[in-house]
Image (cartoon, rainbow, N blue to C red; front, side, top):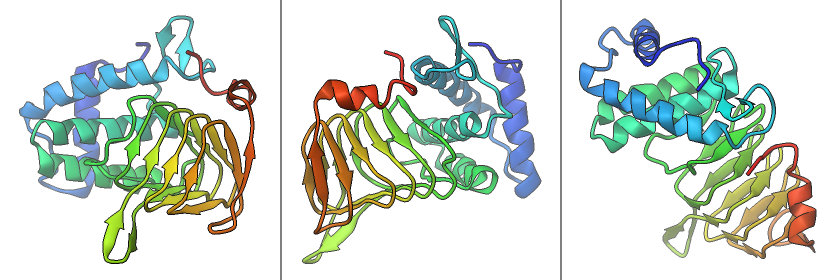
Length: 224
């Protein structure tokens, strides 16, 4: 991966940022393996994004001054810390991402291994089953809805694109190759594969398309 920082320098950088907010915020040496694994995960993620910012030829690029890239990295690092049982450190990494990038991507939430975003300020991702190639814009929300005393969360297929301020809540099942228009709100409803979605539940407008038509609208984002 093309990055001007070594893994050791990334570890030092994140620790330095954490200590600016919490005097005891430094991640212990046990967390070093987490940053190595997080770097490997974002390399695999970024190589699927189109554009020279994310890749050069067959190599992924990682620029810590690119806020989307750094936000994805901080989520991945916090999630990796959580996977390795370092929950206190994971919580600080998650909070640092909120402070720096204004995203609420909780460390215990399983975002897909391949996901990305553009201008993701104010995006919130809660518990959900999410497949690869999820793409988020600003103000997007994925989360639960309580109905008849039961709190349910969405299931989201692969190649789902959420435009600004769109929302998927509750017992919703979103198929593969789905695009949510800006301000769409889906609550406890299902959306079939290969669809464009507009409006708000219970008055959704679902326009069926072919897989090629939907994928064509994402050609500027992903390389596979």
